[in-house]
Image (cartoon, rainbow, N blue to C red; front, side):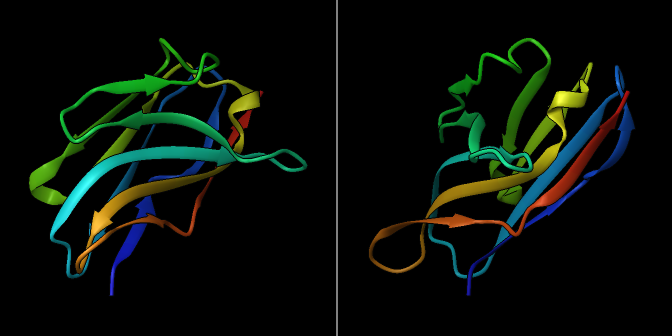
Length: 119
């Protein structure tokens, strides 16, 4: 059984920093792209950042220059370093990963971690 487990969320003041982690575990044969999405109350889930297996990255315009996505392939873990956070960054953050566990690729999601930015 494959699991993605996020950690690192919490309450932070505007202008501060927070680091999210997401570790994949289980019978994983290969990991492709990984990423972070977020969903604020009353809004649709949106892409925050994504990283390919080769390290290529993509960011939402609202976080570019403030957030950094990275991954440790040896640990099957993806990170999101959040700097200069703003109240509008408040949301539940979800990680996702494209994994091979048997004979086919499938996208998996974590359970989400709350990030609250106070002004």
